[in-house]
Image (cartoon, rainbow, N blue to C red; front, side):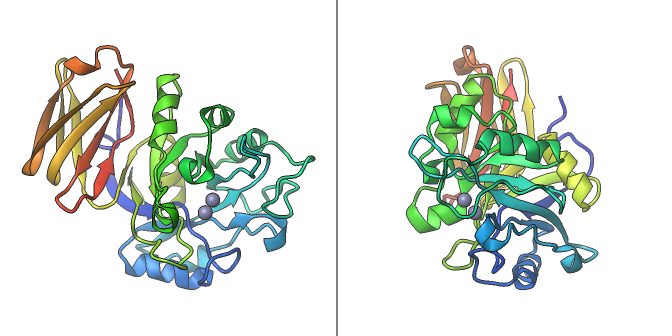
Length: 305
Ligand SMILES: [Zn+2]
Ligand SMILES: [Zn+2]
């Protein structure tokens, strides 16, 4: 099966989750795009909160595209109620400007709201790449997460949730869903509001032949990406006995699978590691984490054995 490392094209660095003054962010859309471009990103999606109080913003960032930087149109969608009684947050990138809003005036759940599952399905059907946003920050349960059948991905790292409440990850829910057989990919994002150190901390590396919104969207849907806080992953090869990982200088290369299945190789400035698969005989899937000397991580999408 083709993955990010065997797909044709080149890696593009992008942030899929960002806010501006069109919802509760601090900076106007133009300045948000300028900063991501100045930071060396190849693309970003502005995903303001799609609620009535902000006039259901589907912000047009096309004017901020340049020959080496593109933008995807998207929003953070809200509807329905999680088991904890709070409203859902669903990330949708690649939406049309005329996407029909749910009846969601504000972040308060209400009885006649559309369900999050229906809203996510509508977004996917409209062409979006859909991700379950910040599971830990939301206090999401596994039962909640199961209902979003339209999700392509789980946000496994959200830098804003890390900066603002030290609940940045979504691995527990993600790994349980994988074990239930859900073919999900992983995304790291910033969720930047520029109100605190919530930017340039987690991104996706998407392999695409063109730096163009359609090509990026297709690659995301195909799972041709990995997620990172810094380290590069250059190749993953799975043989009968082992996973071979090539990466930028790492201190740990870890393979995880179902339940307690995991195996780590530690060292200094490792750019290649071979992790034996023996421990993963009972796991239908594995994924790889690379950690550098500064503690920054990169994460592959799952591989099905
Ligand atoms: Zn959110
Ligand atoms: Zn957000």
